[in-house]
Length: 121
Image (cartoon, rainbow, N blue to C red; front, side, top):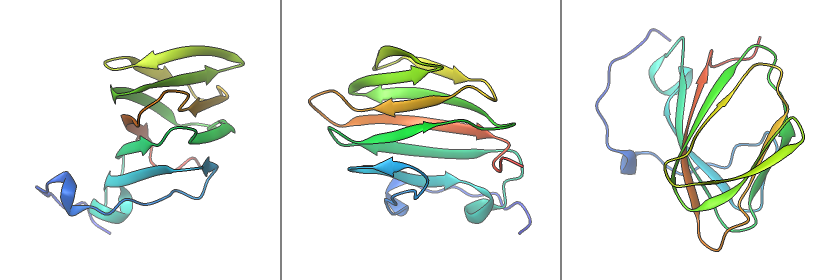
């Protein structure tokens, strides 16, 4: 797919449950991805984890990720260290770092995830 410029509202996208380790109420809207726009350099999504939801510990070979917490709170684990994250926290995940995210809070944890490149080749 060739890159395609778009303007859309987030409500035009359906919630999906990514099948790569996301569990117990972890959903995302795939806003800018190779599948939705032909993006070659970014995967940009908004995610919402219900209380108890999580993504299992994993690592990316070459991908970098940025998490920007919009609302709620939980535990971000990076290379075995856990830290509370909450509204307005920004997290950078370097390639090769094992990481996980757990909603240990009492409300939904909502955040943006930017991944580059979009495929971990």
